[in-house]
Each structure stands twice: as C-alpha cells, then as structure tokens.
Image (cartoon, rainbow, N blue to C red; front, top):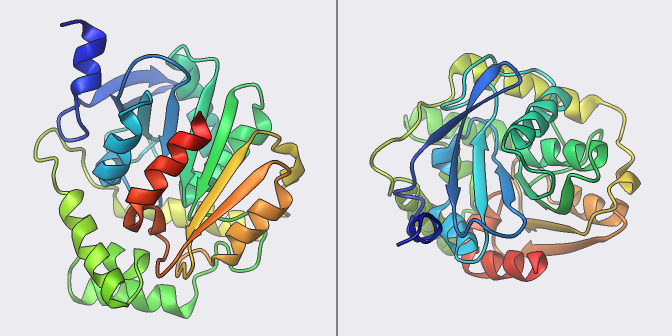
Length: 284
C-alpha cells in the first residue's frame, strides 16, 4: 500500500498530530484525504482546537479532498501566545501555509477562523483559490464582536452546569436543535488518543480582545475578496448574528449564501449531511 493510499485511509479519529516550525513557533496540525489537488486549509472558532472540528465534516470532505486543519499560535498544540489582533493571526496562518510549501489553497474559516480567512484572502489573493466563510461576519458590522445578552446567558448556563457551552451556543432550543447538540458532542469525543491540550484562559481572553477589536474596527473592503466564496450559517446564530452572513454575501462580489433552517452558530455541523456535499460541489 502506498503512502498516499495509507494517508487517504486515515480518519479524523486516527490521523496523527504533526508539528511544523514557522514564524518563530511550532504549529500543531493534522491532515486527511488524498494528497493531491489544491489542499483545503481549515481555521476553527473561538477557544477551539483541532479536536473540536466535527468528524463528519472532516471525514466527509476528506473523502475527496486533501484537508489540513491547524491550531494557530498559542492554541491547542501550538506554541506561543495568542495574538490580540485578527490581522496577526492571519499572518501566522499565511506563514504556516508557506512553511508547508503550498502556493495555492482553498480556505475555510469558521467563526473567528472566518475573520482570519477574510484577511488572508484579501491580503494574499494569489494564495487562496476558493473561500468558505461559516458562522462568521464582517469587520465593523453591528453585532459582530459584541457580547449580547443571549451569548452571555448561554455561556453562564454552561459554566453553572460545569459543561461545555457549545450545546447552548451553537444550537437552537428546538427538539431538533437539542438532539443535534447531543450528537455533535458525542462526535467530537470520538478521538480518544493524541488529543491536544485545551485553550488556556489567557489564550481565550486574548481571542476575546481580538474579536472585540474586529467588531470595532472600520469595515474591510470586501470587494477586494474576488475569489469564489461560499457563505454558510444557521438561521438563528446566537454568537454572530446571521445578518452578518447576509452582509458578507452581499458585499463579496462572487459569493453565494446558504442558510440552514432551525440551526444556529453550528449550523454547518448540525446539517453536516447537507454542508459536506455543498462544500465538495463548490470546490469542484
């Protein structure tokens, strides 16, 4: 069996964590899928690590595509201190991609990762072939980077129950939403070995500062993002208001929008059975 075939046969539960030196730090990342074509680089959400990606999304996309997902500086298995600006996080992402020897990638950013992906795509247009922005919003847009009452209440509820707040933050309160949340939490626990450490309180605090600054800064010129772009979100995003996704799709010239019903911030996880085929079609 060839190395390429062996790599393609790995799943998100078994693929090893790898490490790469770039920009003065050591990045932790994992790879899945066939090592051919334009790779898809995935950037995750606030406080997340490479262990928090939904296995159904990872393995589904990796059935056809080379997938690379990474912890940026100070997060999970990656060394260093979390930057307090999205632009600096984007510079780290660019440095990591360059250290892999890649000159062209597709890029998917979820939530905070979507902020970073917007900066990468606009500042390095020749690096990014196609762009996917999920559960995210534009800089300087009302409600982006602002901590509303619903968000604070959901976070407090998770803290009070000493449980992961994602079921409260990512999913709706409907019967379907609660069931989807429970299923998602089971799925992200499927990997039992070689997991990375959780994001520290200090790292999360630095991310919050970066998110607040993103929401408060002047709007980006999203017309500078000329790549074909897929924008996706749930219809009731409690973390980054869904109207921000509409704004992205309106202001990015070559964008298409997908909104999932009875879904929130984690709509692409709840509706992974729809999202994965849509991603694969978009990347083709």
